[in-house]
Length: 470
Image (tube, rainbow, N blue to C red; front, top):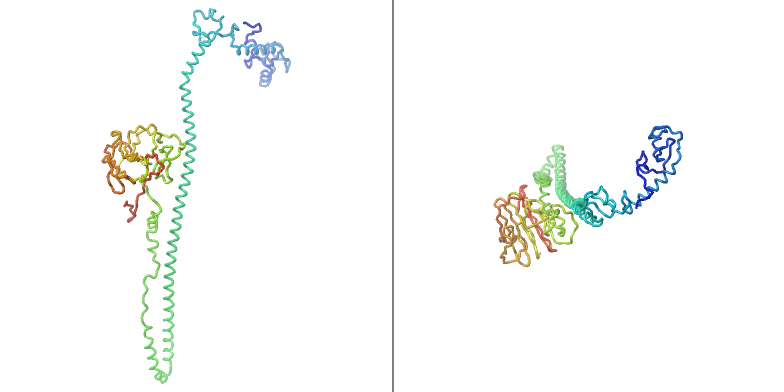
């Protein structure tokens, strides 16, 4: 039903802010403005004139237009009421229909008006339901994309935290490794300086004893020479009377004339202490260090795998919250080696021990690791006491063996296209794959057991500066 208090909104709009008057004031020229709009305008222009007709105002503080203020407040109340009751802005009737041609809600009066002649209408609730479904259908991709972006953002936050954790953990490990090396070097330094001091003491003692012997011989010879020289100074008769005794005494001291035996090896063996010092220390250092032909990459490890501190062992453990980075294998409890192979021959030994389930082999880097399907993977596995081999060309091959293996050697020859598995203890061949390998291959490990699969270190020896494998 139409309201008698309806006013055109344009007649109640301030010419400055273009909104319904708020606290309007009236100028002598009969034009009205919001009090705040007029004061702001006058403060900028510094001229008290009407913004519409430019006529100067005689008052710096125009009176309030109470009639207009009441009309504006009534209009705002009625407008808000119409909005809350969903009334037609033209006829003030409830909006019960939806015009399909104009795509807008209308009242029953609008339906019969000339403006909507031959138009199609639907009940407002039916049209709202239909259009809600349409909007939901259009917004669904945005909702899914928003959900994905939130997931990616959450994963980025997790990655940032994991980066800090990795850096802190790696720093601790680096410090521990260098502390161990420094401790070895300090102990080795002390041992070598101690050996040098022992040799110094021993050879100084030898020289001291030699010095004492020489001092006694010098004293004895000096006594013989001095006494004899005194006899030679005597008068002829006295000299001749004592001549026989002098000669006999000199003859008795003849052993003093023997030349002193030369002493060899009296100096410090500097060559032994300094020769190839760093090389010899490095050679000895291999007692506390090891070299692994394969280092596991924690960034590829399944969240439920636990890697050893030296990144050479892996076992099944409690699930961890790790970033979903592209390198990580999510579908299988697997981990890859950190270094891939594109050429040459390579081998590594793995201690499987008493693990009840394990898989060993190589995986092509071209394989999408997140949605792993088994392609690009060559492996042997042990499960339920049986050994099997599988690849994309041979899904499952039972292997006939006569024993349970404790250590497995994997040998990869990229040039000959051969991947072999053998018993590390006896060298007995277990299985061989032949394939033309074109992609980069990474060592592959799979475990669902609490016992650790461990890559065995190489036994190294140093000869003439070359490191060789025993």
